[in-house]
Length: 134
Image (cartoon, rainbow, N blue to C red; front, side):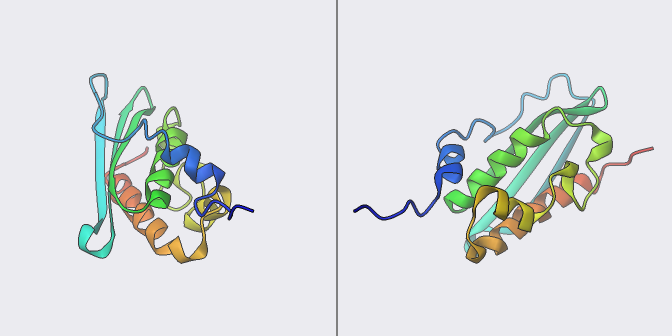
């Protein structure tokens, strides 16, 4: 009998396809928001770049240092943010996606990893702190 997957199927699928990792092309962006949080020496560092244009997120990219749960959550958020209206990107429930507890539940991430998700949230909040919505 094999042991259960410590990552879970959702995290493993996202971690296997980190398509949004790296820098954005950003060519058509009217505005680029950047934010980061964490420290590699503490185990997690995340940097988000959001390219905005036509009132929505054209591209969402990240660079991250951390465990597979961290990278998978960044990937899920980047995928989920693309195409969303800029007006929905208020800090708090980021783009209607909730916060770290919601992400942990949705992606079946163990409670011991909540600190990593809080670092991800901080990076997004830091990116969004420069966003003004009329």
